[in-house]
Image (cartoon, rainbow, N blue to C red; front, top):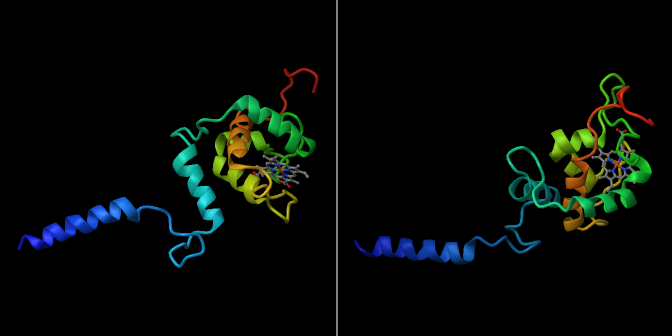
Length: 150
Ligand code: HEC
């Protein structure tokens, strides 16, 4: 009679202490793809309830952006319209601000048909966080007539 709850508690304790670690990479229990893991990391560790990246060093991110992304996307991210729709343009700043999962997936895994490179193996996770944080400060809308020097 008493044994069952005791055993149960014992097993539960063991499970909580040793069972919650991620399965060994490559083992049968390791069923998540690297895409799954990267996207889950974004959702569980980086996004706050407003879809903003937590803990990014924006200044560092700016340097990384200028080195890695500016050559194609422009220094404010608006060189390329990524929406495929001329009437409703969107830039990487638009994605970063309103749709971080798309931004994060594209930065990590690219899109070979459209010519965006995968950076998963090139840029460290720490740097990606700073980059994503900086990208959320880029303009989300097209140039307006009140903006100068455009
Ligand atoms: C060699 C040029 C090049 C570089 C460098 C580059 N990109 Fe891109 N990127 C592209 C192209 C091309 C596309 C697809 C544009 C299209 O056709 O919509 C794209 C698309 C994207 C998109 C997809 C937006 C969407 O909504 O679909 C994101 C996000 C993005 N790039 C982020 C980045 C970031 C962050 C960096 C720097 C780490 C970067 N890119 C560097 C060329 C580049």
